[in-house]
Amino acid sequence: MHDERFPGLRRRGFLAATTGAAALALAGCGGGTDDKTDSGSGGTPKRGGRLRAAFAGGGASETLDPHLAGLFADVARAKALYDKLADYDADLSASPRLAAAWQSNKTLDRWQVTLREAAFHDGRPVTAEDVLYSYRRIADPKQAFRAKASLEPIDLDASRATGERTVEFVLKRPTAEFPNVLAAFGAYIVPENATGTDFDRRPIGSGPFRFVSFAPGRSAVFRRHEDYWDGAPHLDELEFVVANEESARVNALLAGQVEYAHELDPTTARAHEGRGQIEIVRLRNSAMQAFCMKTDRPPFDDRRVREAFFLIADRKELVDGALSGAGEAGNDLFGKGYEYYADGLPQREQDLDRARALLKRAGAEKLKVTLDTSAVAAGFTEAAGIFRDQAAKAGVTIDVRMGSKDSYWSDILDSGTLCCYRSGAMPIEAHISQRLLTDSTTNATRWRHKDFDALYQQAQSTRDKTERAAVYERMQRRLYAEGGFLVWGFADWILGTARKVRGVETKAPANTLDWARFDKVWLA
Image (cartoon, rainbow, N blue to C red; front, side, top):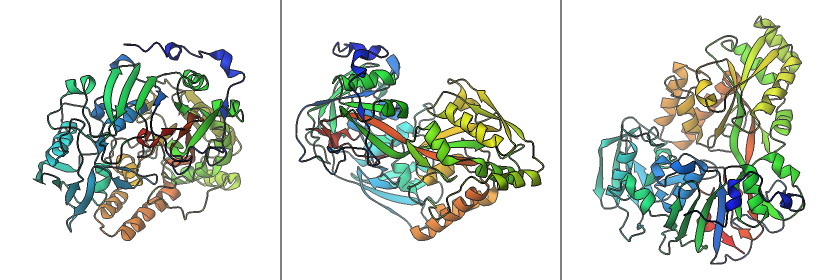
């Protein structure tokens, strides 16, 4: 049944009269004001109350099946109801959740996982058979579950339960970063024999909240799970409200109809700066912003041209202009601040003279190239225009071509030579395996080098973490010198909360463990 308390969330810009006086209080670098929303401050947690969280949704086709979670709203609902064996910390390293421990053999192709004592909402213990059932369901070749590709290294036919709470995973090849598989997006543990029809009617998970009600495309209500293994939530209830328009989410927050608004854009935040009615939380390093150069075709099959483009970019101007300053400069590598990131490389600065010299040596003095972009993501069209103007100063003519929002992500992987690109948070290892190996399925830069592939296999078969980090640094140094990703920035993910909300973690990139961690939030 539709909840008539939120009729305005169906309309663009409802409660418009409130926007003149009521507004966002934009915090400084830390993402808060006097009443911090950080999980480490804000006073003693208070028990009780219902928090209403507004997210963009997926319409009438929405489901609570955690293995189908794709939208941010789906993932937030899934993590409220379910658990994974592991999840990603702020630095994108894997942290144990339902798995209490893991241990590999010497050859890194068998991993023993021990489960902690945890129970589903109906009181049944979480067992090794539930884990194997969940992973086999995800890997079903007839289905298109999100975590299927991530679970590919596991031989699920050979893997087995060695006890009620122990699983032996047999792998197809040595995998040093196997805990990343356990933390994969969408790899939630469900009860053995749970079926698709169960999830929307009465889903049973082991997460911090129990199911109460669900109206696809409208709302979902969950209640505190008192026996949650990681401690019962502070909130009595959590309600997810669908509001697809950013203006609707902001206005609902300003009007007190929700206490949490997900995914606000930088322009909105700046427009309401300093008014003090609500809080802004900035989740740093949540989205890599880049230009993707196809390295298998002219002009970017010449590394001198790629290096020239690295030197054309004024990263500060791009961050200030395309992201309204809501981010920080990149250095042509993915994963700033994440585990294994090569932070010792010098920050690349604009050098137009050197860029012109490189282009001249490459025979590309009067280069003309098309840059594909789209309004599919915040900042894309602005970044394209800014970079076009920067390139003109080096004698390069860029023709900006607007693409369809509906087909952009599928088109850019095959067509064109230069395009706007972004990525959410994931481990650096996953970025490499999914995007930079010869047989990677989403290799947008067409970076195909057998010696680079061999380094990845070396890293994955290296048990010692320090030695493994050295291999990853070697790979990143090569990408820094001649790769196809011109990473110009890392955008903040911006949330808005009511001033009475406490416990929202400010150091959690989107999609990591502490993002949308409503079991740790309370109402002051």
